[in-house]
Length: 288
Length: 239
View 1 (cartoon, helix red, strand yellow):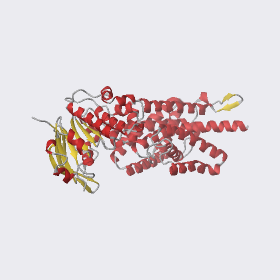
View 2 (cartoon, each protein chain N blue to C red; view 1 turned 135 degrees about the horizontal axis):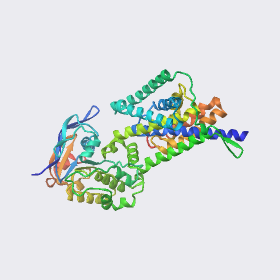
View 3 (cartoon, each protein chain N blue to C red; view 1 turned 90 degrees about the vertical axis):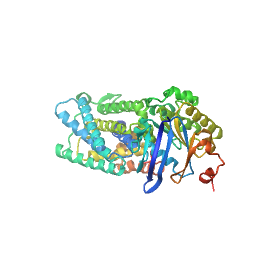
View 4 (cartoon, chains in turn cyan, orange; view 1 turned 135 degrees about the vertical axis):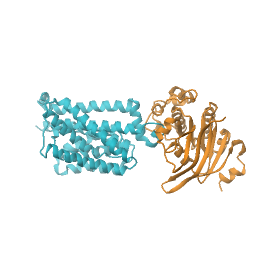
C-alpha cells in the first residue's frame, strides 16, 4: 500500500512535470527573447483545455482534438504578438500589462462560453485502464502524457540546438541589439516563438484536461507554476525549463500530498532562494 | 570619380535628454579607410550606434552609397550592407563559434568582391576553424575579437564599422588585428575604424576624422596628421 502511494505520487509528479514543461518551455523562450513574461500564458493553457472539451463534445478523437486545440491557441498567440505586442515594441511594461489584460479577457470569455461549471475531459478510451506491472497499477494516461512531453522536449532541443532558426533565437536571448545588428529578423523570431509557445501551451491544456479538468481559475493556477519554473530554471533556457518543470512537478504533488497546509511554502520557498542567491536561475543567462 | 560609400550629414543624436552628437558629419569614400579618433566620451561609439540604427538620430542623414538609411531598423541596415564589429566584441556567448558566424550570414551584394562565407572566414582566421565547435564565451579576448570581425564579414559588408578592435588586447594580438584590417582594406572594403590607439589608426587610415564632444574637430588626410602634431595633442592628448 505504502509503495503504491509513492509510485502513484511519483508518476503524478512526472506527468504533471511534463504538462508544466509544455506550458513553461514556450513561456521561458518568450521571456528570454522578448524580455517579458507573457502573463496570458496560463490563459492560453486554459483555453486549450476548453477547446479540447468542445472538440471532444463534437465527437472528435482525443489526439486530433489536442492538435487542433493547440493550433487554435497558437493562432491566438500570433494575433496577440502581431497586432498588440508589436505596437508596443520597446515599451516592456506596457507589453506585460497588456498580456495580463488579455489573460483577464480570455478568462471572462471562457466563463461566458463554457459557464462556470468544471468540465472534465475524458481521456482516450484505450488509455483509461491502469497498466499493471510487477503487482502495481500505473495510470496509463499519465505515462503517455509524460512520453509526449519528452518527445516535445527532444523536438524543441533539436530545433533550438541544431537549426539556424534555433541559433538565431539563442543569439537574440544573448544580445538582442547585436542580433539585430547582424541582420537577424527579430520580429519574425518573436512571431515564431509566440506561435510555438502558445501552441505548446494549448496542447498542454488539452492533454492536461483529463487530469486537471477545465474550470474557471485554471489559468490563474497554472501561471504561477510556469513563473516558478522559469525563475528556477532561468529565462530563455530550454534545459532550465525542463529541469524546473520536473522539480516543480515533484514539489507541487508531494507538497499537496504530504503537507497540504505548506504546499505553497514548499513551492515558493525554493523560488525565493533562487531569486536571492542565483537571480539568473539554474541555467539562465538573462537577469530577471 | 570617387564614390561615397558612407556619408553622415548634420547628425544630432541624444541619449534621453542629453545631446551627444551635434551636427556631426563626415564622408567615407569607397575603398578607403577612415580613422575616427576622439577621447573617451567624445561620441565615437554613439556615432557607430547611430549609423547601425541602434540609436535614431533626431536630425540629419546617413547615406550608404547614396541611399538614405537613417532611422531604419538595425536588421534592415545590416541587410543593406553596413556591418559592425562592436565595442567590447559582443559575441553571442552561448553560441558556438560556427553558430556565431552562421546566424550573421547575409547574401553578398553586388560590387562587394569575393563573397564572404564560413570557409572564407576560417581561411582568414584559422584559429576560429580550430575552435569552431567551442562556445564563444569560452574564447580568449583575441579570439573573440577575431570572431567579432568574422561575424561582421559574414554579412558581406559594403561598409565595415570597427569600434575599438584593439581594446583590451595584448600587443602582439593588436598587431595581428592590424594586419587583418590592412588585408581587408587591400581587398577594397570601405572601413570606418574607431580607435583609442592613435598609432595603429595613423598607420592604417587614408583619412582621419577627430571628434570632440560630439562635433568634428578635424577632418583631413591621414598623412596630414602626425602622432606629435598639435592637432593630436589638442584633441586627443591627455592633460
